[in-house]
Image 1 (cartoon, rainbow, N blue to C red):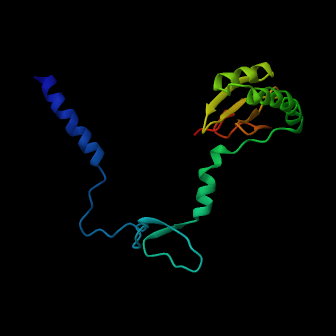
Image 2 (tube, one colour):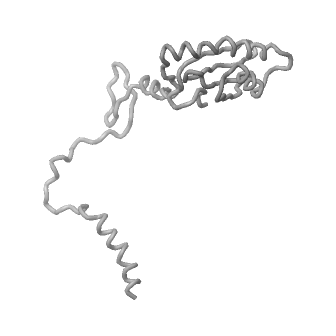
Image 3 (tube, rainbow, N blue to C red):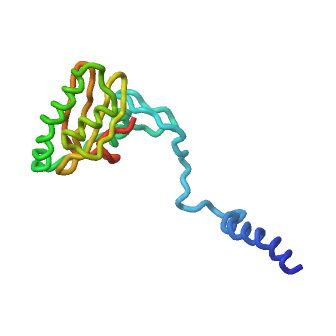
Length: 170
């Protein structure tokens, strides 16, 4: 019987503990930190020469868009690491160009094999609209990345992407 009372009493004690301090004393004046002005209820883009409506918190839409894509930015490499990684541009470009001009087209698997033969590691690939995007670890850190398209090959070197890795998320 005592256990049953305890089971019933525990939720009541928890409720009392959670609501402690929520009651207001009748006739008490509001606390000095209370504000009579309403809080903003909506975010509104700021426009030059236009006053914001009541209840709007203004924001800069261009700055918001720039921050939205920040995760795609690449970190900078040191000059030495950049130079070391640039040594891979020629062999990677040659391997992918041979694949691009070969009869039968190219595949993701073929791109990964060509990149491995050219000396890169930790290869990531993704197919797009008839192309293959790639990213791979550079020998001095950072990345070797680019695309193999029907018309051209692009190969670049740079740091890793802010959200990690060498190939940006979709």
